[in-house]
Image 1 (cartoon, rainbow, N blue to C red):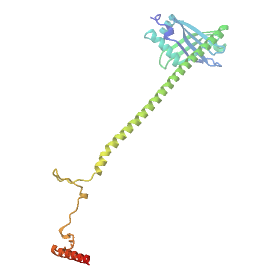
Image 2: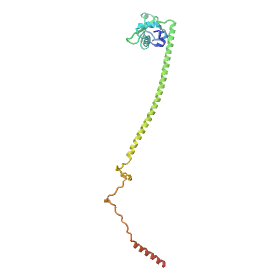
Image 3: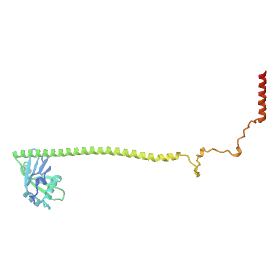
Image 4: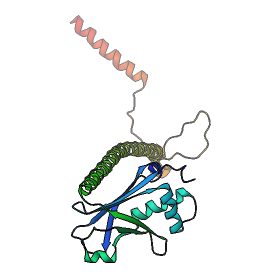
Length: 266
């Protein structure tokens, strides 16, 4: 079952810092655990100056490590536990007791990983790298670390670009919502205005008498009805000129005509 799992896909690579114990070091110790191939795992620890340790773990070695740790479950579960322990757990680099009398790194060391208090501890034995191989291991480690940094930076850049696009889309949607909100408010104002107009017109119309009228009768406002004077206040009668009788008026006209004829004869 272990051989069916591809370590490159299941494990990948993990970087971190290992705290040295048993002998002080002038520089921090960094480590890298990565799948060297589909069936081998490599662990490297170095101060990126002059010290380096490494080891290669085959599938058989990982099976033995799994038995020593006592992790149950599937093979994939063990790889996940190992990776998460190296990523987020406490990692220490322990030196042998006799190394305190020698130069650091002259012998091997142990990488001790504890995911959390009370959980199984993983111990990986590392071999000291000496001679010209030390520079090669440090150079390979440095280049791999730079590659991981560049990949992480590209991922962050893509996430920032996506975030910028999302913020732009969000801003556009907010503007659209504001425009729609203003349109709704204007429509609501017009509806309220139309609803108040009939009420205002009804208040301005004068009241009409509620008496039922016939078809030939027209009602008029109370203010416009003509008041009828009471009998007690009847207006005084006008004095008319008396006209003379017709017989008298004829005599007068005859006299005038006669006088005119006499004058003509004279």
